[in-house]
Image (cartoon, rainbow, N blue to C red; front, side):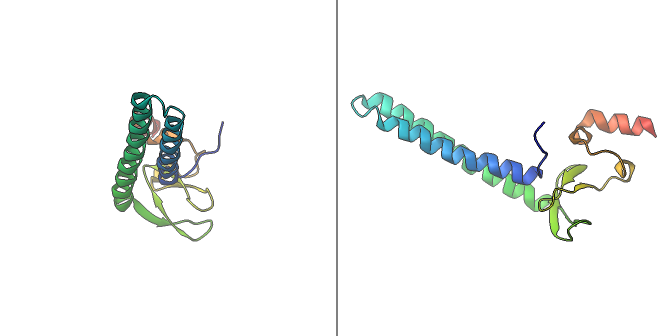
Length: 123
């Protein structure tokens, strides 16, 4: 299993990869210079990937402004937290604001609505 990262950084990395994917798709269009329609399709698909990246960046920017800003107890740096559990964006320390989850093993499933019911049933 791959290591867990901060949610905001993960979404920003996805948006950045969309930009590179769009440029690569447009680059493949150059190989079809003789067939203008195929080249145009590749260029439009690449442009759509770059526009999708812009939309994702705008969405995570608005989400980031509403995120809870906390100070990591491990490294002492300010980080933004989304959901019930998240990782520090600097040192990957598991963080939670839910007192019922303190001391438990970190699991991303705590952010899903079904797990909220499970933790409340455990009380």
